[in-house]
Every structure is written in structure tokens, then in C-alpha cells.
Image (tube, rainbow, N blue to C red; front, side, top):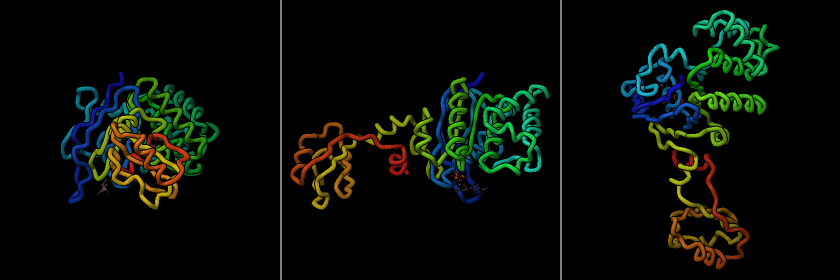
Length: 296
Ligand SMILES: Nc1ncnc2c1ncn2[C@@H]1O[C@H](COP(=O)(O)OP(=O)(O)OP(=O)(O)O)[C@@H](O)[C@H]1O
């Protein structure tokens, strides 16, 4: 029975390098958690600690209320960043072998291998050695390896990197289906449009510190309201100092204003009109990419 993944105050140093400082987040059953951060932010380190391939200096990982143990970890489907397949082993043999390592019988392992190679579009390559496949197809095999034992938790380190658009769709569908079956899914990615589209919750990490955790709407609410005004010449910096305007990004013939909730939009409009004709005046929602840039 899948339980929530609780990551509590994880800290980790590699010698003098601090990789994680008190990283905390929860992934409830049935939710997809997108883990985002710049290179070296601490995503892989966190995932490796969840897996148990790396020990934390302090903090802990729990499934529900109980500390995660060896038997629980066998029920995780993991896709490591440094892909871990045997290059000279046939795709099918390899998946059966990995499923058996997770405790499946030979016939269940064979059935699961059939099912996942078909679902992931690599069934016709089942008799080929892994290193004869393209990198994208090797990645599909790697995903199959994370799924063949019907895991209770999915932990995927950059599963989308290097995939073509069709493979991205297949991967997205599989993650959404697994979450719909009630398991917690966590994946890291630098493709923030995908994270925004797929994830219930997002965690933004920078320099080993969780900068924000929440739905994309929560992050937007934290960020405040924005008003996009198109038309007036920006040269005169017409929005500077207006009451309720906390920040302004000027572009050539448009400006994005960060405003307080009680800001007087009619006064802002009047100020804009005094700088030139206004063609568009609308509140906007920042994308996850914009929120990420501001957070890190
Ligand atoms: N084995 C290691 N020995 C020393 N330092 C390490 C080791 N692994 C990671 N680090 C350091 O720990 C920090 C976190 O790295 P980590 O790989 O967790 O980041 P990441 O967010 O996964 O980055 P990326 O997006 O580039 O994969 C970085 O400063 C990195 O250089």
C-alpha cells in the first residue's frame, strides 16, 4: 500500500562542500512532485539519500510515519542520473533480471517485461543489446527498469533529458498513470514547462536549500500580482514610484509591473496613458520558469 514520502531536514556535506541544508518536503500518494534547481543544487543527492545509496549526515526519510527501510526501498522504482544498465546485455534479459532482483518470479518478471517494453515502444528491440540502442531508447529501457517490479514509489532523476517529443509524451503519460494509481512520484527536471504541466507540487532547491515548496499557484501567490502594459514608451520609466507598484521590468514597448493587492489599477492606467497610447493592459500569471529565475 503506497504511503507518503516524507523527507525531513536532510543535511549532507561532501567534505567541505555543503550539498544539502535541512531539505524538507512531502510527496503524498497519487501526487507528482517536480524537483527543480540549477546544476549542483542538490537534487541528485536528495534522491540518492531517499534510495539509500547515500547516507545523510542528519535528517531522515520516512514512508508515512515510519523510517524507510531496506524492504521499502526494494519497492522503489528508481531512475539514476548516471544511467545504470548493462550495455552488453539484451534488453529483455536485463529487464527480467532486474525484476527478479526485486523479488518477482520468472514468469511474472517475463510478463512485466512484455508489458512495459510494449507500453514504452521498445518491444521490437527486446532481443538487442542495450548499447545498440539510441540514447533515447536506452532511456526508455531505463524507465522500464524502474517500473517492472510495480513499485510503490517512483524516484526519477532527470527522466526527460534527451528525449524526443514522442518519448516525452510517453514518459509523461506513464508518470501520470502511475500517480493516478495512487503512488507518489518524484522527478527532477530542468524542463520547467513540463514540470508545470505535470506536477501537483513543485520543490525549488538552490545551493542545498529548499527555496519554495507548493503548487505552481501557491508559488504564484507568493510572488504577488503582475500587470503587463503594452504601448507606452518605456524610456521615461513611467511606472517608477507609483503607489502599490513594487517592481517594474521595462521592455521596449511594454512593462511588467509587480503590484500589491490593493494597488489602484486606474491610477496605473492613467500614468501609462500619460506616457503614450496603451494597447494592452492585463494581469498576467508568471510561468514556472519566471518564478524559478526569481527564486534562485
Ligand atoms: N560525490 C561527490 N563528491 C563531492 N561533491 C559532490 C559529490 N556529488 C555531488 N557533489 C556536490 O554536491 C552538490 C550537489 O550536487 P547534486 O549532484 O546533488 O546536484 P543536482 O541538483 O543533482 O545537479 P544537476 O542538475 O547538475 O544534476 C554540488 O555542489 C556537487 O558538486
